[in-house]
Picture (cartoon, rainbow, N blue to C red):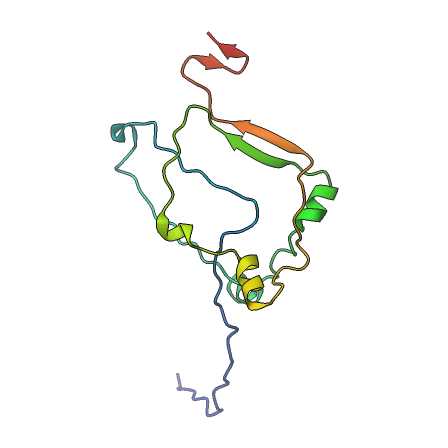
Length: 148
């Protein structure tokens, strides 16, 4: 029933710098295709939002309360383990033109070289060995074994 007061000095903590970002790089590529469906084909009444936060390992611990995932494999380790690399193609789809704004972006490696740094020394380029080609979805009236 009484009120308790805490006269101790407040503790101060310094948060880790949370800045993270994305950059183009490597041999990955992306194509964005025109939507083959009419606007009326899409469910427009139900919608939601998703917030994505890109955080470093210190911020991960603060947010999730657990250790972050381990260090990802380098391209060399990935290749050596015989893991598949995926290549996607769509012979009928028309890729949209890329943005000029994004076209001038530099990779982390390129920016590092310009500054005289080696930002990713453990992740040198490799020639992929086990490539799995993926194709676009099935056409109308097509089954996996062929078109009828």
